[in-house]
Image 1 (cartoon, rainbow, N blue to C red):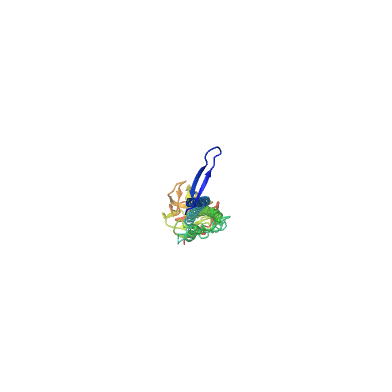
Image 2 (cartoon, rainbow, N blue to C red):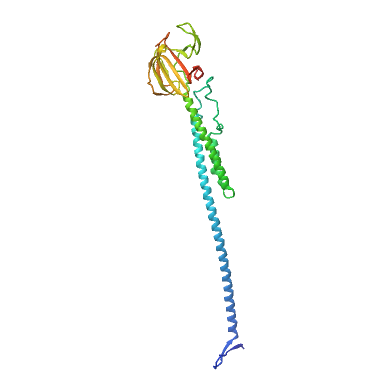
Length: 323
């Protein structure tokens, strides 16, 4: 027999009492439904708080990810800057190799020590160490160290940015040193071009740079040049880059040409039969500038050739590298 329950509803005022009869199975079903609702509500609350937690965690992860992205972009910018610096240093090294003719297997540099008038070569630039490892292999290894090796440590190295800053400072120091070397070698290249390192003409030496007896007076005097015997009309070449500073006649030297090579170096040519350049003209090493003659006080066709450093005559042989 099914059980049932009666619920009495008693109003406050004079009214009939209401009776509600509820069967037992209905109460059980209602209790089960209420339990299900409560459980569902608890589950929803749990899921809500879980979602809230995941959202907070996701926001934290997004913030961390954004920071990592910013650091990565900063690192990429530093790598790009360092690579650009390395490229500039590489170009500077290439210029140094061109200036110093390191790619020329013959290395025919026209210069020699100027004894008695100060050395023009064989000295290091002040405050600059000699260039080390200017070859392509060194630069390739250095560049590879930036582009290939460093990114491998990008994710695991927490001190990446300080290391990049340190690397950037080293690259800038290397670039500054390369610029100093470039400036020094450019000056040396200009000096090399200015030194009279080739014979002005071909012939045989009739009188060297030394004391001799004057062929006209018989007095022993200093011959401040070199006489090179050759036929009239034999070409005379500029022994180095220069500017023509004098063209004309000068006493017993006849037709005279004077070239200014810079760095206090001048060359003088006497007894010429012909002069092919004009005052103020720029000439290059090996350019024909005149011709051997017999003008002035001369005992036969020859070229009188002088080299003066800061106005003081010096032995032309010390400058010539050709045999």
